[in-house]
Image (cartoon, rainbow, N blue to C red; front, side, top):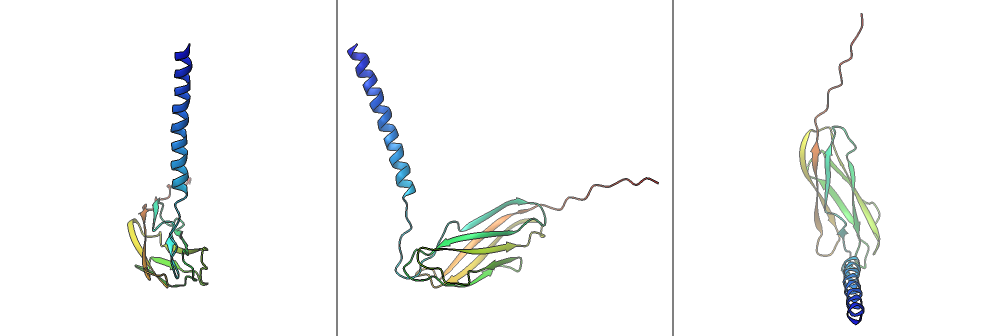
Length: 152
């Protein structure tokens, strides 16, 4: 009987210990904070946007979300696409410390095939005055409309 009680106690202790370690790892992973910068800072949620596979003429606008991790306002001075088919739009107002901003990018989806384009962001961010963002994906060829029969 003592062996059964001891075995049950060890099993409960082992399961509890394993779950506690998993929970502490999850908590540590979720507490990863963006380092603070003295001056204006710029941290993007994603530096690459994958459009995936889209039909021709699909909606081509996506958003890069950034946070000012500094202690001074972040000013996006300019955004420039790598070609005329990639048109970025920058925030007009300064992004205050701790606030988020959005850079919208429109890709011309009337062009078929794979694409990889860049957007160059120029700002007053300390240590990264110029940042390169990437968009990529594939635009499928247009499917022809089904032929309709006419009766005479």
